[in-house]
Length: 290
DNA sequence: GAAGCGTGGAT
DNA sequence: TATCCAAGCTT
Image 1 (cartoon, helix red, strand yellow):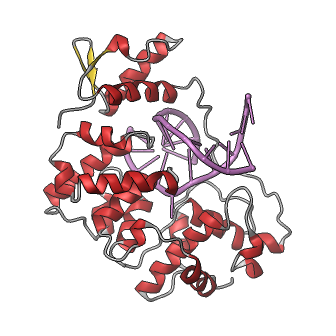
Image 2 (cartoon, helix red, strand yellow):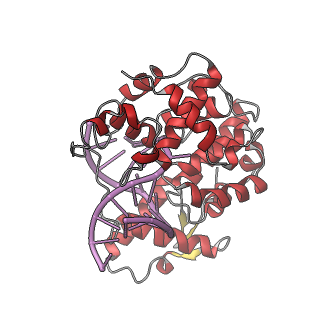
């Protein structure tokens, strides 16, 4: 098995993008917020929202002091608004359980709302410099191609962490760069649709390239159709409530033109169950409680 | 493990 | 135009 670390680390030193969360002294809270926003949302869309968020709430305590509605409203059109709710809850938990300091320990990070295997290790590694495997979709794609000779990675699995751990250099700082470099290669060179193998620093040892770029199939889960989905109605409803905030709206004013009223009611109920909407006496609003 | 969960740009 | 894709998490 080729050692990918030396060429990837060297490539990263020369080719890493300058991103806000990579600036020296950006801080663990900034890294944490950036990772929440980057969960399934592209870098280019995140950057302006991240800067606005951190200007408004420079610390977890500042966010925790406001109602969840403020977080959901500030989240705007980033998508997956449950993340805004979870980030707010995490800020409350950090304030109550950790004295307002973002924890460094992976298990403590994992215990926070909205933080899973990826985000916990990303914070521990990129904010604190500790040695852990950080595995996102970019990493999984790079390893699937370079080491397994596959065109696309399989669905996420627990074994991914051990696989990446085995590739990390011993030193903490080099391991952190290796994690970042593998993600960066997947994000900018070894991309999903049209990889740029001519500029790839590990093309010479890539198993997929050596095999002639075979179509090995794609076991990734397909996204469900969005048009006409519950997700789309939820988006319509929540956008209306954001635009009206802080004023409430009558439930009858939420997606009134949606062709399927049963589906619309189901979507509203699910938003309420998620805690993204509060409803009472025929009125609906962003969540003020907790 | 599989399903559900937004939004918008690229192809 | 339709599909793909994006630094995932919770249930």
